[in-house]
Amino acid sequence: MEILVCIKQVPGTSKVEVDPVTGVLKRDGVDSKMNPFDLYALETALKIKEQKGGIIKVITMGPPQAKDVIREAYMMGADEGALISDRKFAGADVLATSYTISQGVRQMGKFDLILCGKQTTDGDTAQVGPEMAEYLGIPHIANVLKIIELKEKSVVVEMDMANTIEVAEIQYPCLLTVDKDIFQPRLPSYKKKIVTKDREIKMITLNDFEDKDEKKYGLNGSPTQVEKIFPPSINNDRETWTGSAEELSLKIAAKLKELKFV
Image (cartoon, rainbow, N blue to C red; front, side, top):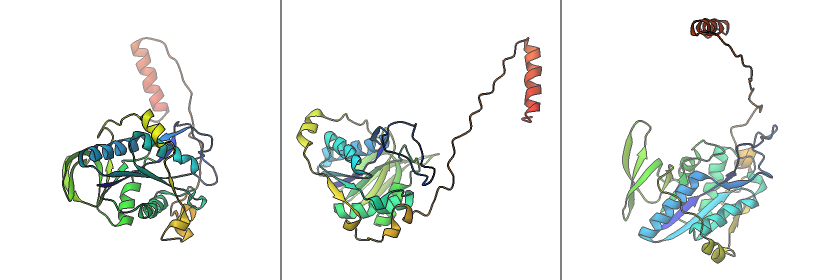
């Protein structure tokens, strides 16, 4: 089975600045890690490989330092990896990112199964996986909680539909976005780190794409734009009251009325 896992390097802290002009995260100098939800997707691929055999490839989009998450994927058991990187891809919104990765996937080959984490911790849109599937022209299922059965031409999964848990069968090739705890991610292996330290990471740029129209990538290809960035206001005002229960109740009622909450 040919499996592709989409992974992403995200900030390792919530204290990340936003460029006030472009509206994108300032990632330079910020500690990074693999997106936690992608660890679940990678572990799912590894479990499937253990059961059915096959090859696991990983793909990510980002600056050159994003190679680190591919190295981490190698340490967990991935066989091949590719980095989509080009200055023309900078500042992409969800739609442009999805299209860019779908173009990169076409350069990686054909796959029976593409796995993505449910969402990323820096964007939290949960849209990239399904949008990629639409661009690739393959069926998809989001919020997968469990792989029930792997058949010869299809996979049966359990998915979270907010108010219900549903079971669905989907034919290959397809894309699944997996929720947390579908499997417990394994730790990177030091032995695999030594074995894979010189393993090639394929570099993919705009020149490698079938569609080389620059207007479809990065800020140029992003239909959504950030108009204004500002820090949230912080209200540290406080009052301390003492008195009996009856006195405090009257004070609270008066304060709520003053603030026009009641």
